[in-house]
Length: 252
Ligand code: ADP
Ligand code: MG
Image: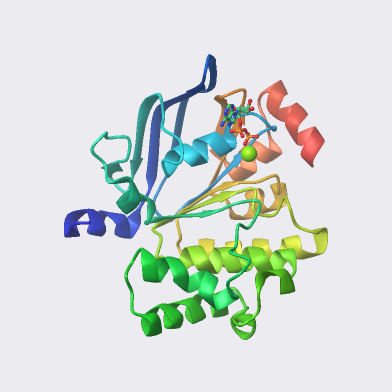
């Protein structure tokens, strides 16, 4: 990546404009507009099947949009000439299923992409991994294997792994939905700290208390369209549409 693009990525916001995505004849994203300003946290909420994961997957080009524009850090990622690998390495993604490599230690999980993709030296990659494992309070478990950790700990490793690539934007897709209730809080608390540190974050979640406390804005999607969006407290405390009111009744 050249220096100009790299500099733009120091403060990566996202601007999504008229995003459309179809699977066969079914249009699951029907013209989405959404903005995350640099350093802000936007929570994306909505019922199952509304298109939230598809939207996140379009942002880091795991899916190819059928229409519209996605701008990350001032750079059009839907441009056909875009270097997909180069763009993607600036965008961290954390999934519901942690997707750790089971045969690698916690430390190795956090160094493998640094070595292979960023071509960092082993000593440097390990130092960066340790720094990020400390950030998620797992520095002492660096030599364990994923199956020796709780779900919450595994998800914290997944966050440390993503951070070790120096992302300028973090995407979270229901990061606590697969966790036992008692470990949800530890993952949310790490995410709160990230937000405080100024990370730009787009978070799909059903954790309404988190959205209300941490998000700058909340976007409610249903059926492939944005139904409501605005400041977190306003959207969650004072929903304007029956669809949002119904949704909140079910999740609160
Ligand atoms: P959400 O994350 O809000 O639950 P998704 O983005 O996963 O919603 O899915 C939106 C819609 O797109 C759903 O109807 C889902 O069945 C459909 N869908 C998602 N991925 C695919 C795919 N790879 N092929 C076909 N349909 C898909
Ligand atoms: Mg989903």
